[in-house]
Picture 1 (cartoon, rainbow, N blue to C red):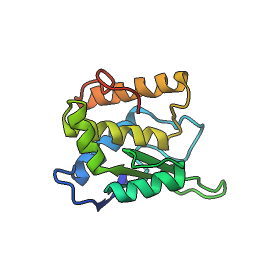
Picture 2: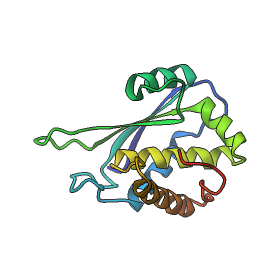
Picture 3: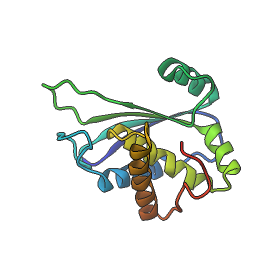
Picture 4: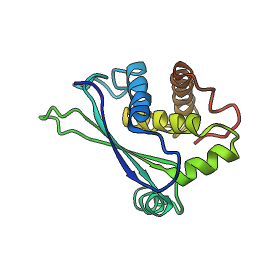
Length: 165
């Protein structure tokens, strides 16, 4: 079946990555990091579905307020799917990325937009797999995974010039 990435474009931002590129970034993250961190799962990198929704600032702000009780937009949000124990559904979850914020951050951090998009897709995918950065130890584990995956994809270390996401 392969990795299925449903892409929803809800932004008019120019130069958005296409579905093939987004799928490649997700697939690489999945191949690099399976089985899931939180234990056994019927999922495998060749049997996963997820949605990436690319939004503008208004929708990112609303979602950030609703789900994180934070004001303003955020660059990436991940919503892991919690499958009922008696069901076998290959759905990993949803990733929402704020396109104007990605463009702004790429300029501000002096990196290519593609490199920043790849980083946020990998970051969001790792969140769907159960990784987080709530404390320094978790953050270091997640950052090291991101750096390795992005290196495999041909992108530089995203943390060389920025603070944590």
